[in-house]
Each structure stands twice: as C-alpha cells, then as structure tokens.
Image (cartoon, rainbow, N blue to C red; front, top):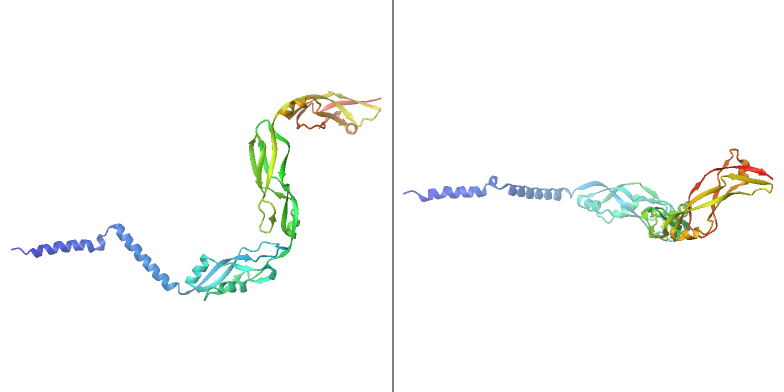
Amino acid sequence: MPDSNSNIKPTLFSRLRGKDDIGSLPRIEKVIVFIVAYIIALCLWLLVNLNRDFNLTVDLPIQVAQLPSDQALAEDPPEQVSVNIVGEGWKLITIYNNPPPLRVDPRQGSINLLDRAKETMGMFLDVNVQNVQPMIMNIPIEDRVTKKVPIQIEVDVSFRSQYGFIGEPIIMPDSVEVSGAQTLVDDISYWYTEEMELEDVRDSIHQHIPLREPSGLIELDVEEVLYRAEVAEFTEGEIRIDIRAEDLPEDRIVRFSPSIVTIRYGVPIEQYASSQKITPFEASVPYQELEQDTTGFVTPIIRQQENDLELRLRSVQPRRVSYYVVVD
C-alpha cells in the first residue's frame, strides 16, 4: 500500500517554498521591501551622524531697529550677513531652515556683528560662532525731512480716429510729500506715476494711477492719483485769412503774394458751429523778420485768437509767401 504521507509532503513543501522564497515575490513587492530597508538604514545613519559636530555657514537676515520719527536711514543696510557656526547637526539643520534675524541699531554707530551674532546664537545651546562677514557694520542715519514735489504722469494715450483731448488732463493731487533722510530728499525734484497705456480712447478718462513705489528709505503721503481728461470727437474746419505785417513803420507798406492763407483746423463737433461765426486764427509776419530776410520769402506766424474754443491747427497753405516792401 503506497505511503500517503510521501505524496503529501512534497506537495506541501513545494507550496510553502513558493510562498516563502523572496525571489518569487512580485516586482512591486520587491520595490517596497527595498524602499523600507533604505529608509530604515537612512534613519539609523542620521541618528548616528547628526549627533556629531559640523561646521556650517549660514546667511542671517539683518533686522534694523525702529528709529525715532525725526531720524531716517541714509543708505540701505545689507540684507544679510554670512555667519560661520559649529554645533551638533540636529541644531544646525534647525538654524539653516529657519535662520534667526540679526538685530542691529544704527544709532550705535559702528556695530560689531561678531558680538551680535554670538548674542543671537546664544539661544541655541552648544552652537558656537566662528566668524562673521562683514565683521563691522555702519549704517548712516540723518535727520528726517519732508518735501512736496510735483507728480509727473507717465501715461501714453492713443485715441480712436478723429478723437482727442478737450483741454489739458488733470491729476488729483498734483503733488506728493516725500519723506526721508535729507540727502536723499534733496535730490528729488518730482515723482513719477507707474507707466500706463490707454488705447483706442473715445470716452472721457477717469482713471486711478499708482505712483512708482519708493525704496525702503523714502516714504510718500499718497499712493495713487486720479487722472481725469475730457475726450471728444473732432471734425475739420477751414478758414481763409489775410496776412498782415506786425510793427510796420508808418512810412512802409508790405505786399504779400499770395496775401491770403488757407488754414485747416480740428474742432470738437459740438464747437464747429461756433467756430464758423468768428475768425479763430490770425496770420502775421513781424516787420523785423522782413528786414533780416534775404530770400524774399517768409513764413507767416499763425496764432489762435482769444476764444473759448478747443482748436487744433492741422495745416496752412501756402507755408511760405513772397513779399515786397513799398516806401511811402
């Protein structure tokens, strides 16, 4: 009779061997086993090695103490200083990830940064400061002054065809108070707005524009201005006017050829009818210019007459005219 145990044992052994043999594990399980082993090994290495002392150079941010209201910094202080320290790895990692600020007071004059760094690192036990660069710092301070300066608008306006300004644009406020160290404020004559482009404009403008941001050493009393301008659609008007001589002596008569110029001008549509009822321009030539001329041709001066119309001179024909002087 066959031994039943002899048949069972190899089968069970084969199954057990298939489950326990790591070489037969799926690929993903092999990767997981490797990652877990690597993490455990890394933790053990850190635990052993980070208890040793290391040398590290770290940049500590500079924090300037608050000055009295009547004083101001005359120069930007360095943003950070380079500090070389020695200590346990665990503590150095903390300092490197979150460097403490190095607090300085400009009123002290020459500041010994090595001493300040040692005081700052005193909060960390067994961390020693070896070196600091720079070693000495001097942050100049001056009396604070305030001055009002005009604001310069940096706005580029491009209009839709036939549109334009009526009058000059207005900014509110038109000046700004700048405050800071006297040597810095004395050099400021005006303050610019941020650059802005307004394109295809056909409506009146009502726009807030920020001022250029000052450095940390200068303060402004306003941050933006209101830019206002009236915009209208223009049409073209035309007028023919006589040329006259200015400051003409009593015994002189001047004849121009041609004696009339044609002026084309732009005018807001709503002002066109009013411009047709008056003579909005004059054309003249100073007699002194005639005396100095040697060519026989002069260019008439075109001036807008006193009126409330918003006119834009576009062309004058002819630009130059001939003349002759008659002595009476």
